[in-house]
Image (cartoon, rainbow, N blue to C red; front, side, top):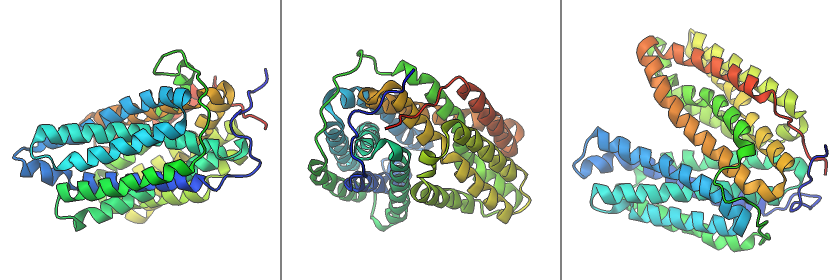
Length: 380
């Protein structure tokens, strides 16, 4: 059976406008990083406690999941550029509304901001893939990831410079809206009109599950690496910093690897590297050893996503690009949320080391679930 060749990506060389897409995404995620850092303080200013802090933090990813699922249909029916415009606009509106003087308003603002994020990333990924040849799609996804992490890091660093969440929200909204001036510079692709009216692309469900199981490593590190380190040798914040910087460097500088290695070999190798990195962290007797393990984890974590996304699109056809990306990004968010809660129970019962052991088992499960996948690449 022949693999469908992309119909919208015909250029022999990369279109430089992919940098605009990365810039738009980075600008938006500066805002997410800055406002998230100031959220707990704002909730307490409004007279509420930790439960409300959790609700204000949790409404964002919940709304983002809905945005990712809807964005797939929007992209395939109306094009990535229009969907990207809606994502930027909603993100800016939600950010500006963060200063509303009551908790209900804050929750609505966070929901709008999260829904905008759901549209924004999915549309940015679809737009970037339109601007590169088939052979460089994995690298484009790597650039997007690097832009995302750069934005989050800069935003987290900038957060304390604002007087509070209301001031940050207005500033972030203005900066995010700059993206609206960049979107018209992107090509207007003809919508495929594809789709059966469903929010999910059913044929992308297995790749999405593989992505989700692979994210057990991500959830273990972001949720429990600090606890593990602080219980043994302290300075656990260094592990999170190392992980973020390593992902930025690996995905931005080595994104081409996902396009060069045979998909099956690359995916299997990535699972092995990620499992070894998690094992190194779980057994680490000192901070330097744990940092080495974190870097290894970042290397292993960098390949599954671009390999699975690009091969799934190549198999199903570019007319289903939006639905594939929407389904798989939603799978990412859903599984990370579930795993963080489940890992919390594991840590409470057996400690943070058990979380990393469980993550290793789940990475092995990701490999087993991935075996029936064809992982074919388009040849043109």
